[in-house]
Image (cartoon, rainbow, N blue to C red; front, side):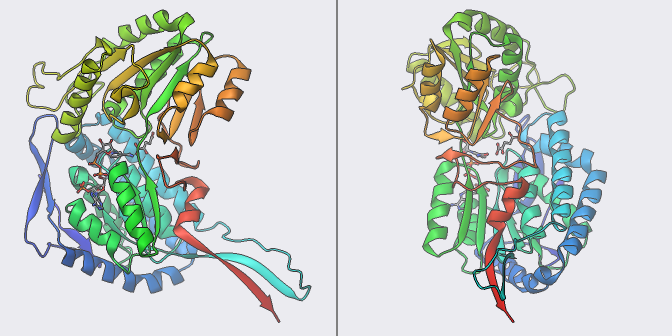
Length: 481
Ligand SMILES: NC(=O)C1=CN([C@@H]2O[C@H](COP(=O)(O)OP(=O)(O)OC[C@H]3O[C@@H](n4cnc5c(N)ncnc54)[C@H](OP(=O)(O)O)[C@@H]3O)[C@@H](O)[C@H]2O)C=CC1
Ligand SMILES: O=C(O)CCC(=O)C(=O)O
């Protein structure tokens, strides 16, 4: 069992509360480890350290900051197996997925390490022929990083690595349900000997530690991924005190399967996009909108594959789908399944708790498929964040797009078709930040911008070159000799 203190000003420090909280394995309710149950005083200490460290960190060259990130990547590589195993134990994702995510974290570190060598501005012609006008970028200062439990390695890194490379210092508060995994990543940062105070981790509840960071006058920017409810509150608080904020929130992602689609591909990608990580991705496929000509054939193939899915402890080799990440998420998913039944959708597969041998004490849900789902039903409107697919029948691409766009979210969407005209109409008319053709809705590439439309985000983008927009401020410089 791992026990972690907070990491503040270069040291592992116990919370002033002297209390810890346990993190629970959702596959069997065993204790995975403990972290600090921190207080506002701990937040104060971390922000103070980050503010102090900012002066020297920002004055280092970009390549020098990049060297630190390369070092973290190398250290993390040597701990990959251990970090991945902790992730599986702590939030249930299968071990191959956890290893993939950890490898993605390492790749993100290396990507942003190279960013330290890239240009930060442009020379712009001035109307004054004797002047030099150009833009440069400066860090925000102290950045608060608030992360969810569904990607406990990749999301902290895709927020921290750009924050750090562009010269900010960081206070991170990981999700309580995956704080041990995140602390293991922070151990790699600590082993790389970044200067004291450059990154700080404070664990504890969202309402105390998270809110404490968001409200702190010395935190200049906040980057958040999680629920809409919390995200919106964070945005409002940040706006009220003039801090910059970035919110990545929910999705209700559709796939459209047209009459001319490769059905085997569409089935494979729908299952992967909808049910990997037990459907706990903001990019997960939730609504499956199928044209009438292939509806029955698609359904038959889908159900055949759904019935082959092996559910169980993600550490076991033959398991394809693990448990929900926590008791609360498990209850949420079961509640949505009941709502689907009550509101008149027809259950085709799954539909409740999975309790086969070895799974009795875990938060397992059967892979679930509903049909005759209408646009008004709750399961067609709200983010479920679980292994539940809603099938909807349409007659044309036009109708498919109307149904697909009838959602308050706009994160990711896919179409399966072999017709280039249909592909182009979808790319043009689908209201989503990520539009994907003949590919699943999930699966973000680290070098490309990531973010949503409508209620899915604060309209900024993360990752790739887009990250510089949030983590820096532009200065326009006018120089006359
Ligand atoms: N877009 C995405 O990728 C994600 C979406 N979700 C959606 O959100 C639902 C609920 O998941 P949940 O974990 O409760 O998500 P939350 O939004 O509650 O949690 C996300 C992060 O915010 C923190 N937090 C909670 N309250 C506050 C606050 N008042 N101020 C600042 N930070 C706070 C949490 O801390 P703590 O863990 O201590 O509560 C966690 O670190 C899911 O069912 C899913 O629909 C969830 C996770 C990721
Ligand atoms: O699809 C992915 O790989 C990323 C999903 C994601 O960012 C999220 O669920 O928060």
